[in-house]
Length: 250
Image (cartoon, rainbow, N blue to C red; front, side, top):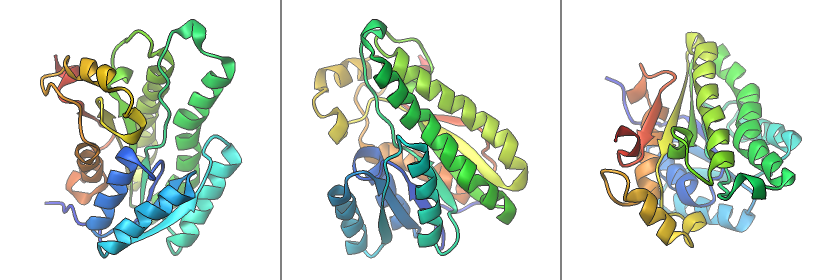
């Protein structure tokens, strides 16, 4: 049986300065990984790192603006340096989730959503997966959303970007899986985070449609991510794991 233990692994988590990313970074570190906390806000990033180190874990902050391809590739190279030559686990969590009518979306907003939600994971995988494949092992976990699975008014832009990520997950599993790199995704439901703090009514309405009947806590999504990143999921390739309170099951 595979283990949840991640001792000796190097994990890069994007969007790790708050919310699901911060919870994931904390959990991976708790299970033994050296976690590279990536984000734009250095003060929040250092706070996440300090909390991990305070619990005896190993972590470093890496500043990156994932909206620019060059910055994304620089992040990958910096992560490899901090990881003593490798990254074993990549968690593509960073993303933005604007809601609203299609006709109200500015062209710049469309470009930004796709740059961060689709292009950044693409470039990180392009930079890091080949070396994982050369070593014959690695795990990539992409964070998706429940609205990638069904049509929802006001969520065309966000949902479509994550639907692209889910297809990339399967394509990358086919591409890198034969060489030992597992690529999977977690399809998260409405989650209480700093980013959704002002959306209590919207979260409650979305959560009411699912059997669980409540929004998730970031730690609950992190558990699903950590499972897919671990050897416990050794025979799981190209899966999209719903952590959505059952929303896509009903």
